[in-house]
Amino acid sequence: MKILYVGDDWIGSNARSLADGFRSAGHDVLAVDSTAVSLPRRLSPPWVYSKVKHRRAPWVIEQTHRTIEQAANSFRPDVVFGFKSVYLDQARLLEVQAPLHVHYSPDDASNPYNTSPEYLEHESAWDLIVTTKRHNVPELLARGARKALFVHSAYDPAWHRPTAKRRATNFDVGFIGACRPDRRGLIVDLARTHGSKMLVQGPGWRRVPELRTSGAHVAGAVYGEDFSVAVAAVTSNLVLLNSDNRDTHTCRTFEVPAAGGLFVGERTDEHSALLVDEKEALLFSDPAELAERLDWCRAHPSEAATIAERGFQRIVDGHHTYADRAKEIIDELVG
Image (cartoon, rainbow, N blue to C red):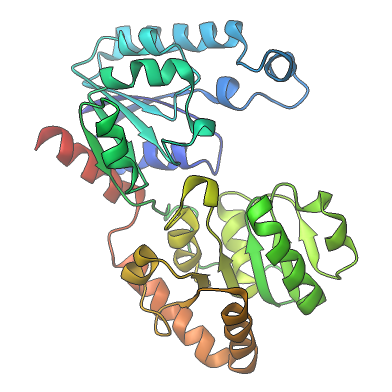
């Protein structure tokens, strides 16, 4: 198929990984970068406009749509694929000439933060809505979606793979992800316990004052291969979910094991189905159980490494790449 793909195209973005996944699955993909709309550069005029007006800059939206329409006129796609394209002009996007229009939501499609009033107004006009949240499927159908498909998140083998260590220091425990209210207390408590043997890396953590006195190593966001390099320095890699998205799994569910890291994550039905507890991963239900898991890893590093190796094999052998997800989506379209 010829796929006109609209999504953020910065290095390390899930949107770029899925676009490459369609190409790896054998399709002709023309990508149009929507980053200027969805993630305007900090302190730029579009960023200031979005903060003042609480909506995206119309001149940037217009420029992006012109690029999409010019691409469609020359490419003549079979599918227009929008990756979280909720900030674009929905009517204009759906009018782009193609037999099929597909929207992909990487987050909870019922969370207002991941939608827009205009998107919701036009949601029923999309031929297929793809979501990584199983609970979204009945919700989407109930509010009028023509067809909804659940797919798991994925990993990108171009970036998520075991790498050589880049630092002599090894951390007993680490968390790589954004600072969120539902994570902050746990991470601060762990940092106070593990001190210099803990890595905390991701957007927002440097602004948490309690972490500055904990002794933990706190750093900014990492993407692409840099994520795998960070994982390589950690014995126990925490996989924490986003309660606002009602997560039962996340991208890190696949990225951490694919990078060779030991998955230490929240116990959910999906996590339990994807990785066998105490054989391919270590799952926990509360902070007390997590503390026990981390103490065990520190006391049994060889056994912990063996669990990480089994987890790696389970994920890479389990058809969990973005190319695999692309095949699932196309199968739904043509099946």
